[in-house]
Amino acid sequence: MPSPAGPHLPGSFTKNFAWHGKGLLKLHEGIRRGFSSNLQPVTRQAFRSACGLDDAGFLLAANFFLFNTPVGPNNIIPVDELVRQAVQEPHSSAFDRLGLFVLNLSLGGRRVGNNVGNEYPTQWANEFVRQSLWQAGRWQRGALEESGMDSFLASRIRAGAPAKRKMRSNYRHIFELVRYLPNPPGPIDSDPQSWAAGALFTAWDRRGLTASSPRQTAASLIAASIAEEDYKLLGITVEEFRELAEPIAGQYELARGLQRLQPTVHRTGGATTAVATASGATGPTISAPRAIAPLSAPTSAAAADLSWLTTASATDAAVARQIEQRLAQKRNQLLAMRLKAHYGHTCMACGSRLAVGLDPERFYSEAAHIKPLGKPHDGPDSPDNMIVLCPNHHLQFDRGIVSLEATRGGFRFVSHIPKDPIHHRALTLEPGHALDASCVTWHASLFRSKTT
Image 1 (cartoon, one colour):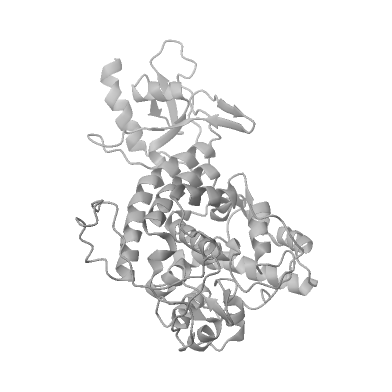
Image 2 (image 1 turned 90 degrees about the horizontal axis):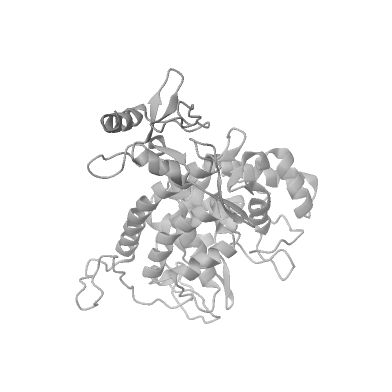
């Protein structure tokens, strides 16, 4: 994982990140214009000339989001997933949250000499998320309070009090732009399902830009992300991250990583060649675009008809569709994991917690669907159709030995086992979790005839 370092310099993070009220929409527009709506690397000077923005504050602040890499006499801005989304996709809330992620990732901006702790200008933001904002598997709202941020910046930033206050204000404002603030006290639900694919593609792109061997397997990508604690930048637990990242890493490997962005070329292992940039300057060489077969394509290249995958946009769209399909399958698994964590893996029927690890301490529970999934019952795969049970009570619930019934104040367990201590025990629901009464009624009706 990134090692704590500092104190850091504030750089130009004291500039105005409101960008005249346009927020990260201005970042989206500036990147698209700066790359002249093309997926080709540009020099820093070419970007400045083409972005159409004469706002020095924007140009300086954009450094914290873009990835600059020195190539020969020029400073090159290569194409990565952040750039691709700005060039090829309309502005969206998912792009804004991707912007927050790359800021916290800190693999961006111009490198600042060889000063220890200042290799990347926003390393302090990465440290803040990993060490303060993320606690117990979630981002904690309290860490973003002025007092919490001021305490962190005081120990990490080498600057006067006014500069630190401006940094805190700018950083909190980005959380407001992406609608994570204001938020009630307690955990923040980062809801990464809509933006995790773009975030991880960008993280793996940027690490690949400086790696000697940019082609990696899905397993190695996930392992590297866990080592770098990317799950904290997504605001989830490492277990949730594994579930979420597995289909994304598979698609990244299928897309051949950075090669999916051809006809762009990136600096890898110190090797560089030349390309025509937006300003007509010389930079890295362009290779022919390569098509990416979808998961369902035949394994034989001769048998696969990839004629429809002849452009970068079509290729990216195919990858995006595959990611969306795989993430849809994983989303509900994540919901179940979150629900179990919400109840601390405590059985809602008997109150037990099954310990499955001591160092670190870990517990096991199961999410029971009240109305079964799939044919012929077609129960919804959502938290309002789930309760958390130990394995024993889950089995009994699925067989109707234990069920639920509605009461005037909520729900209670009904057991058909004589003298069962959970019989008529009230079901306690934590804040934020409600049950679909129709599913409860359905379950009780299904088994009533079998137990009477």
